[in-house]
Length: 194
Image 1 (cartoon, one colour):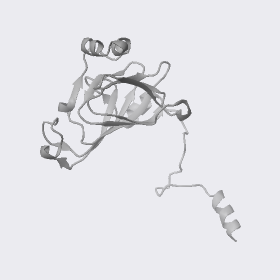
Image 2: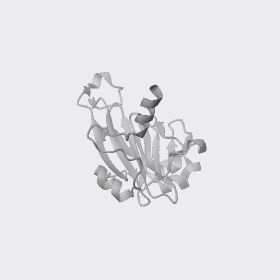
Image 3: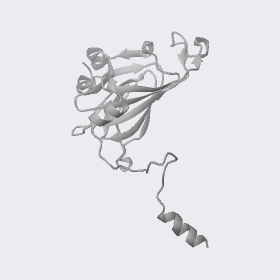
Image 4: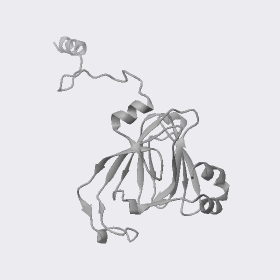
């Protein structure tokens, strides 16, 4: 009896409650299609394309935050973030931690210049066996910049912050100052600054 029921279920198609059939990767998306579907807009100053997807209505008062924050902040924020061959994320730092999530597309090269003078370069992407990361935390006060890996068409990621993002917490890196502080990485810094 159980075998007949299992066979009957295996012949059925899975449908969402709305009745729409589930399709997995039925079409290859282009960067432009993703941009339109997610309503991504240019991200001023930093570069790339983004759309804020979540901003908590709950607020953290200044007295509960580390001293580096100038006022209250949302509990958390999240964005979609996309890089294309003609964009990059310029070197910048934030006061709080930022967690990257890789969704689809091609790998992203990220450079991180840490407060202790060390640096790290990683690949964000889906090839876990090659050492790429589908999720990565950038600690607060770390200079970070990223670009699409050469030959890539686009990368769609997301980032999450808690406390949430506030423009007052963003600092854009200056090429000369970063190159002097991290001379071994000057060529990479030049690629990731304006």
